[in-house]
Length: 72
Image (tube, rainbow, N blue to C red; front, side, top):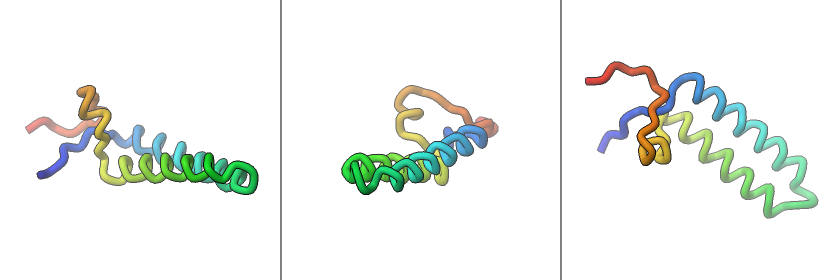
C-alpha cells in the first residue's frame, strides 16, 4: 500500500521547526518534569516522521492536502 503525499514543503518546514522547539523544551524540562519531556519527545518524533514521509494520517482523515503534486 502506497501512501499518497498530503504534506507540502512549507508544512514540512513548520513541522520540523515545531519538532525542534519541542525537543529543546523537553531537554530543558527533563530534570523537573520528566514525564512531560517524554510526551514532548514523542510528539516531536511524530511531527518529524510525518514531515519525512510527507504523509499525515489526520490530514488524510479530514481530507486536507497541502502538497502541490499533480493529480494523476
